[in-house]
Image 1 (cartoon, rainbow, N blue to C red):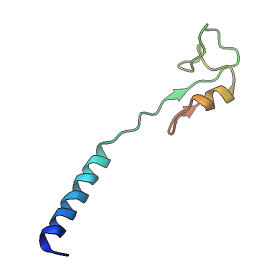
Image 2 (cartoon, one colour; image 1 turned 120 degrees about the horizontal axis):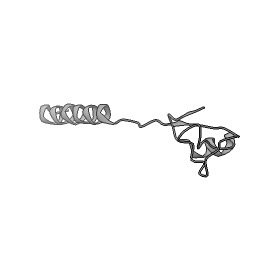
Image 3 (cartoon, helix red, strand yellow; image 1 turned 90 degrees about the vertical axis):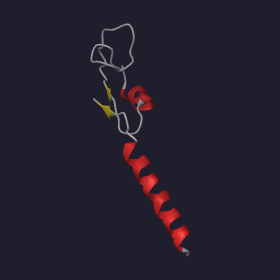
Length: 67
């Protein structure tokens, strides 16, 4: 591998590392309460929690916490 190509590869890997470190995952807390009293059941609080665990798991994304 030539010197200039090696420098390019190192710079490219460095840029990828910086980009990877700046990515963040926004995890959420999703609430489940079969007796939630709210008219909407979106899982954003205990009062508006999903009525079933299955619904909450269906709405969850990677990193979310289901309570």
